[in-house]
Image (cartoon, rainbow, N blue to C red; front, side):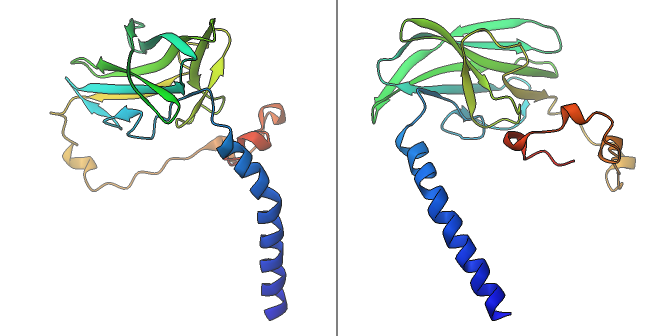
Length: 196
């Protein structure tokens, strides 16, 4: 048993040594543009929002590299598009911070948002990455689809859970987990957070 532990510890240290330079490179080379939908510094307040809320969204960029930054929000229920100019509100540690506040309205909705900007003189777009799982995004040279951004869910604060459901046990069955009907759409190593 002790040999197994030593072997596992040695393997861990070897992998940590191999990965450390890659991790350091990623930290030393911050992205030119960045937004993280799960971080209060970029989205406040986080989570689903009751009617009438206002959500402040921020984008960080390497200082003096972006201009004409706009928040583009699409109401997925009505296809209404709201474009808000973002204001540069701070410069700190070599980065400019841009900010806009979205009023979510008074009806149940899902707002999907992304950013449109000029980066080093060329049009650019910043939206969620290919996983569409929230968090950090990526730059696009062409406009991404309207639903490629991050979601803000809007709910009625007066809603109450029906009595029959308050203590119910609900099961969800995912038939796609039982048979792989189309191997061509299996996740790649890059999408390894998805489990089949």
